Length: 428
Image 1: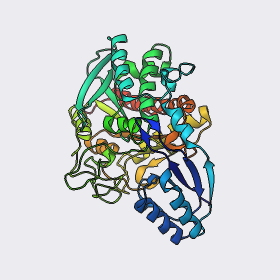
Image 2: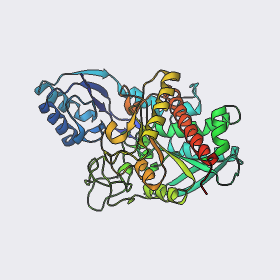
Image 3: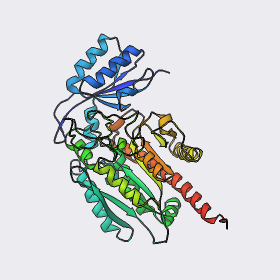
């Protein structure tokens, strides 16, 4: 099957404003091992950011690759492609417009008819939204400070709780573990808004909230997310400083204690999949892990929201072995994917992470599963590469509704299984 490799020619920002032009999307088809080696070289020796796969070690023949290239490297990259007869075509002639569109909000574009939830929000706006949501829903929402980031920004989780039933179980949802995946925090905000607005009106969300609390962490990586708005839109990791390297940041989704720093992660601080100095070396990962350890008896369902590629993944990503309840997880992911396709005609792949994409040790979903949360999933939201991390605001609504229907489908299955276990007669 013919597969495309996509290169993004990007611009740099100064305080969120464009300082150069020339952002483009180039489509390339690597056909030989030589071309693969050249592209690996381009992704590591020049100013570039791999989008998909996230590391050059995963670049293979006939495997789709998306590579982000700053404008000042554009001529060099194109010259290399031409020199080695690697053909390409321009897919997006002006990616600058997409970035500007993503950064538009009510203050910069008062004529916009989009709602708050149909726009991407800065970190400051998300903090303001958190406070406003608490003030407007004091009987349903609690804000919990679970920790702080490397740069001492607060990590606020919202607890949605409708009643005080004893022995109530819970769902955990985190967003924004990777800074450049803006649709992820947008979904967390969308989910909270939907839950509070449609409780008592939508049967599914009413049933879920009547029986389970929901913890929502809108931005797990606030330092990185803030940095994508002010300095580098394509930043992925957190912003911690290494003691051994000038390179900044750790991949928080390689920093959990699940086959930590084995194949699929890197011990090199300059790598996009740098695993950190040791498991939970990063305050963001440690804060989430500590909270889940404290609530492991009540949290039944763990969900981590990412982008892009339209996938519903479950453990394991850190090994090719199957999870103990693999068939159960597979059936739930399949049903969720079918629900998305039935309602929105959009296909989502599903399966165990390592077998569906590649090995990714140290992930939060595997760690949660190993902790004892046996229903653990990672969602990769829209799209499949047309816009990648630059998904336009006009697509937020559809992307969030797709994720929402998957969350509801899986949460209801977990609730159904839990209630069935409670009703089952216990042996004497």
